Length: 391
Image 1: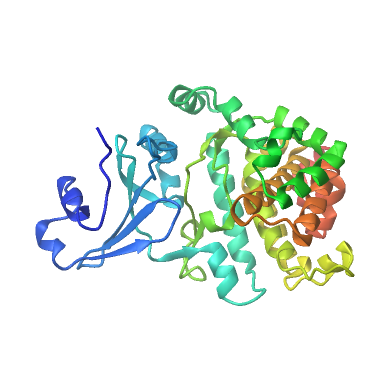
Image 2 (image 1 turned 180 degrees about the vertical axis):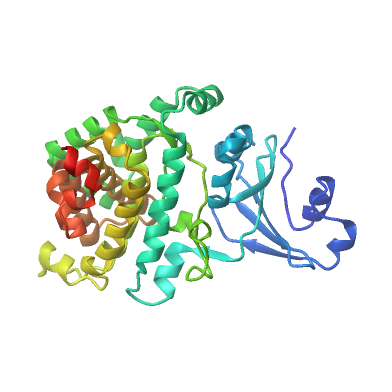
């Protein structure tokens, strides 16, 4: 039987069958298509209520990748453990999931905006440290409340087979040795990337060791880019717990917290790296220095992000004394993943990609030395006073 496919003609009948709207509302409601990798419809009702209705794309065999099931699992997890209810205000608001047809419905958060969009459009090179502080605090709260809880770990283990192995395979995807088969699968720039990547034996070794040491111990987002973070339109006046929401939990799982923090730092660094001035006669160091968004402009926010995280989750340094070094390495891995994504969708790997790979190599192979370069301060400046006294 073919899957039920949502469209603008049947959306109200579908919502009415779920008691999410009435027939009276239908005549006065509006529908807007939201461009995305999946099919997204924004439905606005007369009284201002809005629902975002998403359906995962089906392949020719009528199957999906199952990402919406994984996202719904996060919301189901919070419903399953009522003591975690308070962190739901930091997530999206899912109201219904149709497993058979992979349809996910959310309350639309129209008092928030995409954080990447905020940084890009609000004011060039304006990075309020209060927003970075809220991101660090929110992420720390989610990690801390679930750390090493056996009941929570079992929930994820029972709803998907081998989450650790699945996560490891995703992290290392596409970074194996060059084989003759690959030349027919990737563009010429892709071959250039793989050749440059494999020139550095230490880089591949660092990635392998990082993935092998992956330590799942709490609830993690696993794709925490700036466009998966929403910031309140009224962020200057909003309470701390309402400034930030983390959305698109399609890769959420029981994972390694250093990966989440490293990924969001990498997303900030990409604003620096993608704003570089490049050319044949310009060295990499000059390109980095001449960037339209210089690193020193980002550093106050980067420092506040990490400081807020460790202030609200200092125990992570007891669990993992090398936590900051691992964060740097996961940051480097996230940059390499970003290069791969650009190759996949834009088929390009130019001077910016080469510079990004060089930065990623430094982060992965020399994480401790990278800390003052990225943040402008030493690692010990982030440690709580109590830890410095006891060390």
